[in-house]
Length: 186
Image (tube, rainbow, N blue to C red):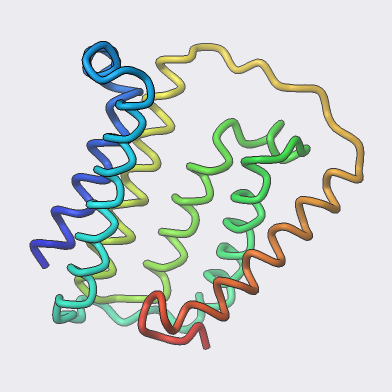
């Protein structure tokens, strides 16, 4: 479990550098250059992912609460919304007029859905930790960036593209979930 906790903490710490410690980011960029900074950032994230994957696989889950079966349909709907927001994060879409941070919102919703579906200790660490990171990151970025200026609404064709990207990504994750997480979606 220690590897999992360390992985989640490293992931969050690296992501907090630009939003909460811009001085550290500037110092690293001065010392390493822009590409060096990005390389170090990427290596630290790869290490964090490795720790999270290794920690997840090596941790023996302790069941803390029974997942409420009545909320499974809600959790699945939240997962669909999370993938829709994830697709919207890289496309100009009307969802970006509602969600200032669609990618971080997607992580928070994804995490909440997984906490509704899993009641064990390693799920609480992974999904709870990443969900908490996403919420704190949203607050930190909002404070750093100030007033939100919404972009004009794009055409409806963009919405269709967003739905297509989200559906394809969700289908791929459902297919790969047994290998990625060790458990099937159903």
